[in-house]
Image 1 (cartoon, helix red, strand yellow):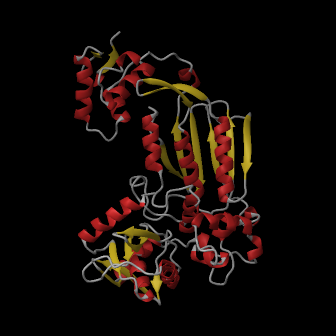
Image 2 (spheres, helix red, strand yellow; image 1 turned 180 degrees about the vertical axis):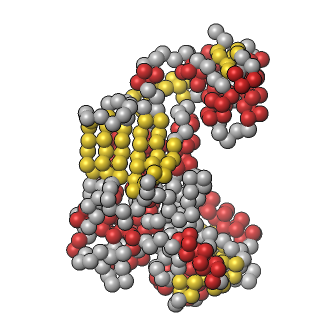
Image 3 (cartoon, one colour; image 1 turned 120 degrees about the vertical axis):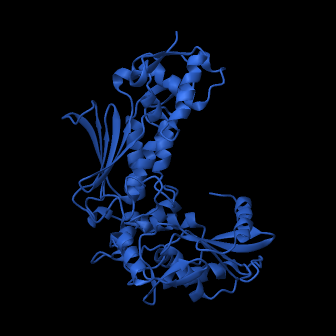
Length: 464
């Protein structure tokens, strides 16, 4: 999270840019209904930032006198939308010795939001009613009924573990006089009738599986590379935060330790980067389709790979092609609460980090698949035989001023003895082929590699 000084600098940069589709500001004595209109318009568009405590005409910072009173009015504005807007907590920022409030409307919110029956969107600096065509398009993109916001029959406040609710509220640093029920309403965990939603039961329920029996994780460790009769299994249940902690513990206990080349240095590490494994597990818990109750999340650990498969395909406008960049969640309430608890980044899937971390440890890129109404992520490691093979010592190359791509090529060669242009492109998918060709050619000219073959049959080996 950005520190206050950086945010203050960003405020000045935003004010210099001026208001637009993703930026609006209001004075400290704003009208609640006016703020509700702007927030709903941004939520139905691409998100944005609203700054409170700014002169509407000049854009000069005026500040606010009573931050708590302003915060309460912001929450009143979010509750005017239908369904209620669930946003990150407004932030109080010190700018030029004055206080302003920063409100973030994340992109990719799952609902279509209305105010008194009107559906609004942003058009430049204005918030206007959506045309019939725009509304139809938005409904197509976000038209999935949000299961997490429904209230199951017969569920009452007694079905929530209020100790867990209290622990969660402590993380929000809210005023003590704020009632837990009001906070849960603001976070989208209680319906308008005051009954707990499925999201609340999954996050804070005494017995979440009473309401959703398959909202669980089946974690399995196989000794080989295929499904077999002999395995280690653990059924993981409880609230979603409890499930995340349990499945992380299971994973840590069942990963091997290996010595791997990190750049040109040998380091002892786990066979898969824990950050990448944690990210795909949290992603599965946060984004699975809880309306599909025929199956649970599966974590399968094999000798050469990890598979995490969750019910439900990719939501809304997210596709395999835009997966690493798209911002859309079918479980906005669950994602927000898990974000408040420090489990997940609010604005994205985190899968782009998985790709980067795997690349940093010289492992194959992860594989993303949609299979018969499920979403599967596979992390590839190295076979047992490969892990037991002595790698070539590359420490002699440390002082040779190689670029990171060339270091990756040498690490690959230490394991697999030869490298092709296609192998190098797979290691560096975002780099132009001509740049990679020059990298290999330089290593040949420096008498470090030998080029073998011609044209498509070309490959490179280390010169001993």
